Length: 360
Image (tube, rainbow, N blue to C red; front, side, top):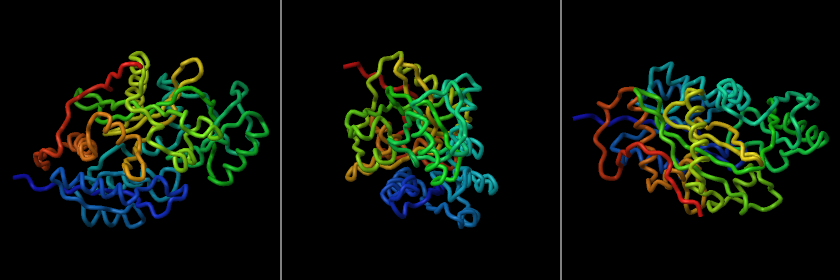
């Protein structure tokens, strides 16, 4: 009889709700993950992704790490746990060192995708308050910290319409975030998020979850059409997100094809989430990749990350999501002999494409 798989959930525990802690895991999410791992018949371990993490991993040496760690500090902080695991020879869920580092750096991600012929919004990286713009980059622009996630550093006033607004906001952001700033063409069309699970592995391809659309009609007008920190924290409501998105087959195929190609070009593994936006002419542009998708799902507080919302749109539950994401990593590492047959509470689903939803 197979012994229990020892699964370590490695994450940063949220201590406060300020801007720089918002991407860390709240206690409710940790409990959800723990329950899902236990329901799957596995042994649950928890490791805090702080300065003691390497020694803890070395000591307990789990069979596999479910990595959701944002890291402690630095521009490549999301690569810290993958690096520790690789040094110690411990299998882990999710993309590798290089992909996590690239994914957190928006300009580098865009450069790679553009090299592969995958369209992203026109941009430039500005390192000083007086850095010049490209001549062909026209207002309005949106400014973003180059290597932050969870909309850190982004709000409605990041959209600038002239030179004065650009220079004032740019100086403020360089001072606050101490990193280069991405200045990108502001797109005012529909916005989508695409979740994937699986791998380009032994003839298989990643599976695309139901596409989610952000509905800006429910946000206060003063927030504009920017899904920034204030929109996500103060005015957030699950009714602002439509999943599955009500889109026709042509647009769905365009989004899915770009997401699959981007997943492959960036060498993503096991799971990821891609964000897209359209311009006024209906042209589709890649915005960013999330190699460590958020997994919060607190119904009482209405704090729902996009990735689990996509699973719920399939009629799946939280344990299904956690089980399947870990399972694809187990298959990739060839650890199936350590995995017990799951009970009725968790079922492995078969491959599917995004659900087809009739237009209203």
